[in-house]
Length: 254
Ligand SMILES: C[S@@+](CC[C@H](N)C(=O)[O-])C[C@H]1O[C@@H](n2cnc3c(N)ncnc32)[C@H](O)[C@@H]1O
Image (tube, rainbow, N blue to C red; front, side, top):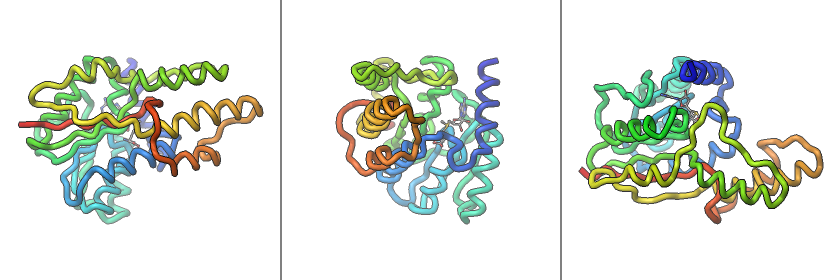
């Protein structure tokens, strides 16, 4: 029942267009900056929970990558395939339906896998681990998985600062189970090595969800994703270890 409501939720959001995967378009820009910086030209990429396909399409058009986008929402997949045709990269991208933690059995092996806030849609940590293992098995030996997901502890650290300024804590959305850093760290073994954890949204989360949130509450103003302070945050490097969204880089060793 909950899984069906999640599917309905994401199918409905597909109609939003560019912001289908998140209303927070600055967060999405930060994610894409990181992903595009990490993935070399001509790589084969698997995009897990690809949504409207924007990240895979940017990799295809800007870095000559080719790859596969996976999503369980037929509406998201239609939108992704249509944008791929419009941008002339339909031959280098394919979009396929699958419901995590399962993946299609016939996928080839990839140089890179990416996910942006997809595993957090799964029911619990067991399903997240099952999805993680299936994703890692789709990589070539030496291949990397850029796991851009929301983590529980990063949100808790931001909430501690919000509390200092008399702001209510932010709760994860109803359809999300944020990843627990300690549990996810235990997924590593001799085949799957955790290379790096990067809290790249830390400055943005601090400025948008703590400082701007406080200023907005004091002024009685509704918060806007495109506020000046949020846009300034986009230009700054990441400082500190705040905010739920971070990139964990995994490597398949053999
Ligand atoms: C937060 S959106 C992100 C979409 C895209 N990665 C982006 O950054 O714009 C999460 C995506 O994961 C997909 N998704 C959620 N649960 C899924 C599941 N169990 N299997 C496959 N896809 C799923 C949703 O349909 C949605 O497109």
